[in-house]
Length: 113
Length: 113
Image (cartoon, rainbow over all chains, first blue to last red; front, side):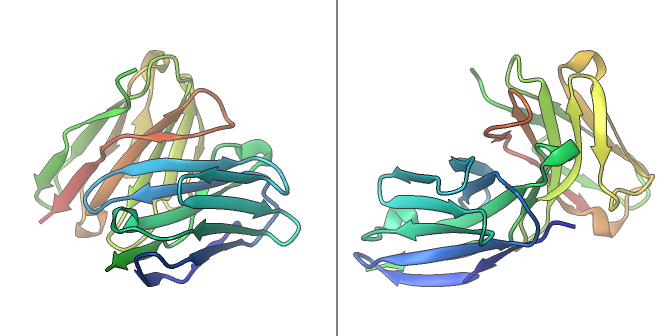
């Protein structure tokens, strides 16, 4: 059974600082997704990583995937308050269950002055 | 492209009552997914459809839960004899196919008293 773990679960950052959120998954998966969720809202897609070594960047966020280590990272550069939200990674079960996503517990990010 | 819509957005019901939720996916998306999210947790897979065919149901989904997608367009999720443990946010997502971004709707928040 696929399990996904994120750490840290809580992250308090100062504006302007850099930090990384880690996402480990338990079994082979070649597709990894990152989502953002604001309080009381639904999920917004950030990145889709479809192969080993994939790296994607959007603004101050950069995501990468290492399928051999079963690890994805979400790196935050020079954090700003607008990035405060909960971030989820999700791994695709693959095989006959393509599209079935297993989510991590989420990382609650707070950026303060 | 109007996005994924869900109805109702909020539902309060008494224990033992039946409830039905509706999801309208993005037009021409043939994949439709249902997830459940409780407070402080990541979304949990419930079931998914390829067109009108239900491909898989979570082992966590009891017999009180049923979903259908007649004609491969909108989908309904029914919960019979609701229990307090069913209180959660029910999220619907759609995608063009098995690979790629799943776009989430705003969710239906269910409270069972």
